[in-house]
Structure formats: C-alpha cells, structure tokens
Image (tube, rainbow, N blue to C red; front, top):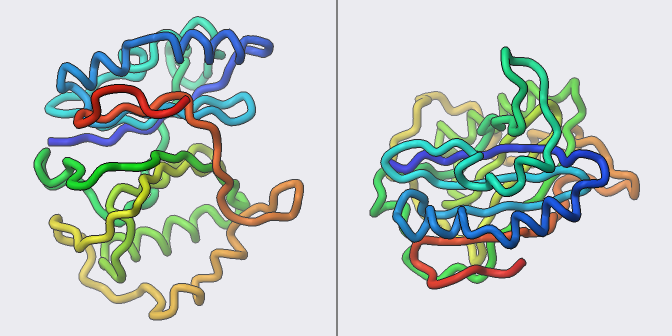
Length: 222
C-alpha cells in the first residue's frame, strides 16, 4: 500500500546554500526510487524552509532516509523528548488517495511536479479543515488525483503534478452527508487566507530541488 509523506524543515541560518547543494548532489532519494521503496520523491525550497513529499511502497521511510544529506544543515525543532530535524505535516486535503500500487502508478507522463505554499489566518484554520474534509469525504466534486495539501501551524504546503489527472476516487468517501456548498465559492476561501506582503491571496509556487518517479530514468529539473 502507498503511504504519502510530507515534511517541513528549516535551514540553520547561513546554511541554506550549502544544504541545497548537498541535497542536489545526493543520490539517496533517487536510489530509494530505483529500488522500488518509493514511487515518487520530491523536495522543494522556499525562503528558509525545505519541504519533502514522497510516496512509500510497502513500508514507511523516515525523511532522514530520503533527504539525509540535508540533515547537518537543518535546525533542531523542540517539542519531543529528542530534538527533530523534520516536522511531519498534517494531510488536510486531497481529492484522491491510493487504493493500491497499480492504482497510484502514473498512466501518462508527468511534465511537471510542483510545490506551493500559503498562509491561513490562524482563526480560520478550523474552518478551512472543516470545509475541505467535507469536500474530500463527501466526494462533492472531483479534482486533481495527485494533489495534496498539508499543514504545519498555519502554513500550508501543497504538492501537484501537471498535466492534472482528474478521475473518480476508487476508495469510498467516509461521510454520507451533503454539507459541501453546491457552489464552492460559498465557502469563502478568500476569507481564510492571510494575504502576502504584495496583497496576493492563496498559494504561491516555490522552487523544486529534485523530483524522481519510479517510471522515469533520471532526475527532473533542479
């Protein structure tokens, strides 16, 4: 069974360039994909943040085994008995989910794998989850099969693939209600997001560090 993993980390001040170079030069993620332990592995950088998205096949790998080259350059996060370099992000929305390895394999070539980020207003976080969980589990309408949005504090990180694949989920929804607004605009997502410095709402694209897929021969972009 495929398990989707999403993590956030922060660079030690002044170590971002060295950390990114070490990560780009490492073959660790590519080797995990080549061995069939991961279906997809991707990393994205934004400001002093590093994000990981990867899909484990028949097991679960910690982020250190996917992007271990970055470890010496990352901050420690408090909050547990032992400091952590990586914070697991909470999956707060996806249109689709893996039903099996075969179901999750890409049937058409992926032209681009992308990461994006946005900030929610702290007081609107619960509302955002409420609306999106309804949409997700009521199967109110269909969307991008491989899109997923994760949260840490009020920061959202999203993973996408292009061209988008839109299909009906195989896994049944977990809700039998019909609470999703018939017109999604009535959920007023514009009131949920914290504006950027330039006044823009919603998500902004961020830089890809690497992206590998089990069906590809090599690395996509940097």
